[in-house]
Length: 323
Image 1 (spheres, helix red, strand yellow):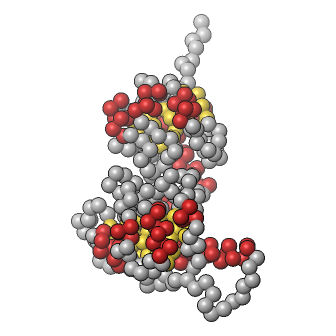
Image 2 (cartoon, rainbow, N blue to C red):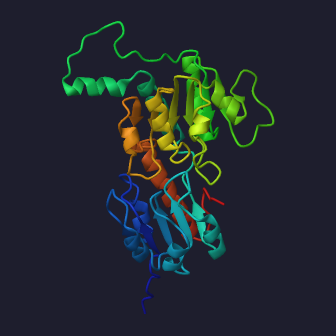
Image 3 (cartoon, rainbow, N blue to C red):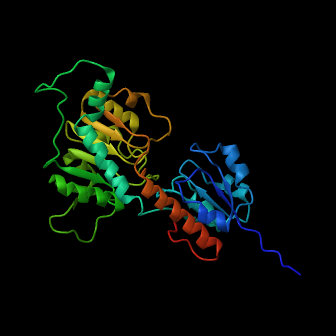
């Protein structure tokens, strides 16, 4: 008599992943894939998650009590294909015994590189220059044409000194920029001559360039509102790598008034919507959430999410648990 093999565990993947990532998962699991670059609708998501043992989510997928109820008691893991987990109700998952994982570490270098790309584009007015050429407007080299800012020796402030903030700070050495930062907690010791911890208001007051890389949570949402943005030096530059920490309307108003020289934003609070007030600003460099968007990094993120799924469904623990 031939024994039948046990059924493969059902897994939902809510978005098309980088090339070469899903083969291992498909060989071990019954994968339902939303094979699209756009997120599933809420109704589609709640229907697709029914009966799944694990789900690979992205930041557009809200994992809350309704989601967990739809999935049913068999759900063991939410593997978030991101570092952030603001789309996941961690308390609701813990209450139901559902594990949560994320993908930290593997996207640090790519995101820090993107922060510097945006910073250079904003300070040297590259977006304005390219738009000028593509528009066909007449131009000629001139001593006062599209004058930008130099970074050498300019004070750099970093809001959020996690992995990405530290990588941004390391790259600042190439520009001879003194670095200060703010975290919720001050380190017990600081390397002599290295980045200095400062209270938030003091950091803002002396940061001619500010990179925002802290995670979004209840305590950081709109942390940089109009009042705090006004603490920055005249003609400062703001680079935002985290949606929701900088009040986007206040940022646009600071650009419009001339209080800021320029700003750059990589992801937005209500993606894919971009505030019209920011779109209207010539000195705003706007990117469609490209921080980790390299082939190597996205493959590493996908593979880490898959590793977490396979580990949990084989009876182990996720490599990168959250909570």
